[in-house]
Image (cartoon, rainbow, N blue to C red; front, side, top):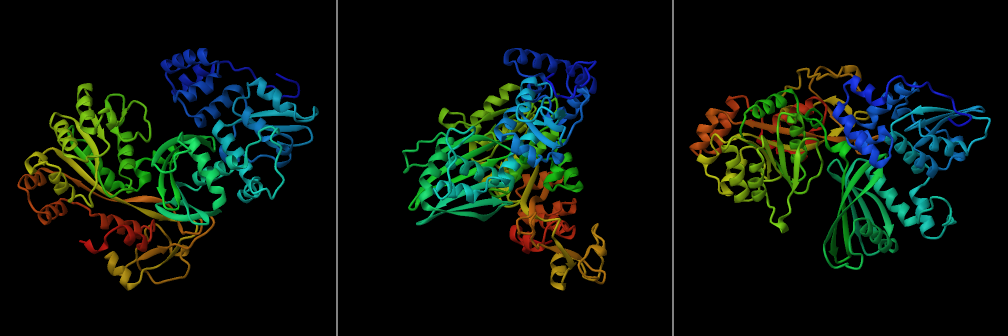
Length: 583
């Protein structure tokens, strides 16, 4: 241990033994990690995280306990401004270290690995010898995010533009960590979009400027407008990152790239479309931290979860999730597969493309140019002895026929289908060539959903529903509907009545009044009585009447419940769901 470092006690157990004792990993995991570590020469904990056996957030407090050090969580990682003036950001990032508190004699230093003597020595060189270093343990992702937030706060977007235009003094290229302004501009744009929770970035050239829009919670909002003179460099940088041909400006191109944002690896998919104003670029953001949410977080309440569990309890049959593009169908199926995933089951998927990767689930990307279509993929999967098959989309007769055949041979099949509601799935399948007799007894359940924006909890305004709104919500406006919110929280005292909430807008939600989205759903479990009607090719009203008799809850009813529970507004529900079909 170098001079000036507070010494930690020697642990009595190896870290791997401690993790096995805690039940967080298995001896097999330790053996695989040690084998990989011998090849890479990386630290044991870092190798364990890289292999996916343990998250760095879980490892940090255990490593701290193992070393007899103190652990600090991400929320407490605020760098000391004076210390950051002494320690270059590039050095801090390379050493995965963050100075938290600096006094005349002691520096509290958060580190991903306090046993990294080389990193400790390098940090030590930037502080006076009278200052001792107390190493603390923090997750590498938390350190990286704190450093990125610090850099962002000290590197304004407009300052980068000024530097790009030559109106500010340029940093010397030979300085440590120097990057060209266009590189920093692109990185700033991408990281800001991730931080704001955007799903897409739209870069749209016009005659004299470039419009930058972000899609947040399903709605586009303008972020910036840049001078057209920046567009060639900006588009070239993005095309280089995505592995595209920068000389070709007349063809459609697709590409992808990865970037570390806030300590997490983010995937970006980029599509270029030639337009009369120039190349239009749309970048889709795949943040694995946001995409893999449990069904409860997606908006599925107790009633919906109970219906899904009953559907999934059937050992065979097709389960369809329906809705228009962008309604979260694949996300819901991912959450359902994650809920079902266990070591006893062989789950295999066919996707175009594979968006998120799961442990134990065998995932295959469709490659139609090589002859690997959905239909051919299902034929191949059936030879792999699967228990559950996930097909990205039923889009043609061959795929529909193979999905049904897999269900008839005793498999659970999950897939998506483009139609408006659960009852529209049956005629849609009929259009794809499936007869009513084939569908009967082979479809386990159908889910339809839309995504609505959630009201910002910090600024939503709670009020009494008007007489018109009460009529739409099917509640008398003289009946109290508290829904977990006390009258003391309302802006004005009112007589007992149905409560609703409106968006207001604040800094936390970017002035929109909404933050995040939830699913409004309807779930049709195919019962024996419905199977008889499906086989007889019964009309939609007959199927709906039977479903309602068996407890079916329409999408409108689920949406109304979320309005009365103050999760979303009535205007937002009307925007996404057809409210004329109540009942």
